[in-house]
Length: 393
Ligand code: PMP
Image 1 (tube, rainbow, N blue to C red):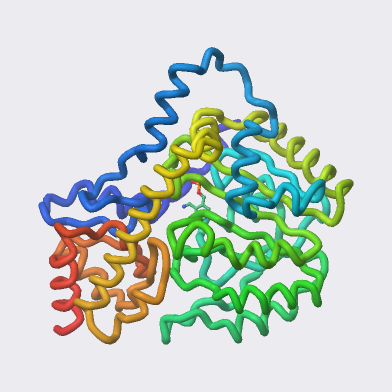
Image 2: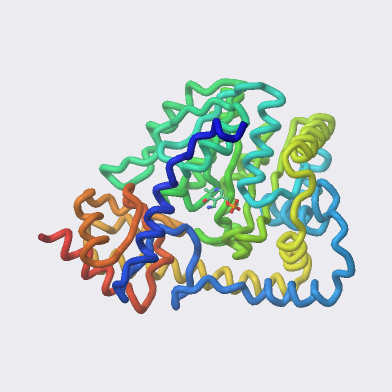
């Protein structure tokens, strides 16, 4: 049986990480890895999470399974975080939340629910998009189709092209949107563009699915949510895959939620039961630790304040790195301050990427996507000098 399996080629990003680990250059910088790092290059556990964990350790008397839909304090907290304080009253029985293993789990359970309603449904994804969208959605049997999104030549979102392409989407199609901090481009929809897409959705009848992996890391927790909240308040149905990996720093604890707003209470109940059935086919119950910690933070005013303060510091640090890079690299790189979240495409040539790696120990994906959180007071100048060298020679 198992002898029939072929060895798959390694992920190219893993190859890059391995090459980085082996590079003896003391000034080397990893701009490929997709996690937040502070000004010292570390990814520490957030203070609010440490405090919640201490309280959990003191009070958690059992490791019994969580309910299949997850911890109620977490799911109700996520509803308020993602769709707003008044969401429970506003959406009533039309909204349901299921705790999932990370944002990936939410995307996959969402895809399974769609496939159960419409096997092989078409999902429109941005070009480019986060590469994992392909296996997560395609693995559930959905057919992926791209819509133009990022204009590489001008370093900006090409909304006209996006809008024109999505004019072809019909009822029964799903349109995947990045909530904020588009990965990999950093180019986000404005509120006005969300409003235009909401109208398009109402006209064409497609179902939006929003991937919210960076809420709070763009403009702020509420500002980042304005677009998808506008849409959720108006369209008949919407799926939202939310992750606590970045904004709570809970990466390995696999903490996320799938929110579904359906046409009516019966439809919402059907989505909920199908989501739980899909989860039962894959992993049964969600992991508990991260959700109990995040749920406690979302329900406790003091812990919530501490967390929002820490998140604001992370957001401001990324914005200040963006300003620093744009200032040092000059007029061709001003797009970096207009973009949001951890990622941007530098848009430099393949041989420049190679020189940065080989001569300066600066590692980035071939696409030139960089994680700006990999830069800090200790290495920003080195990075900008290296960039100016390869750009000007
Ligand atoms: N969507 C996007 C666009 C992401 O970048 C990520 C994390 N890298 C996720 C979803 C989900 O992450 P996780 O499963 O770790 O919560």
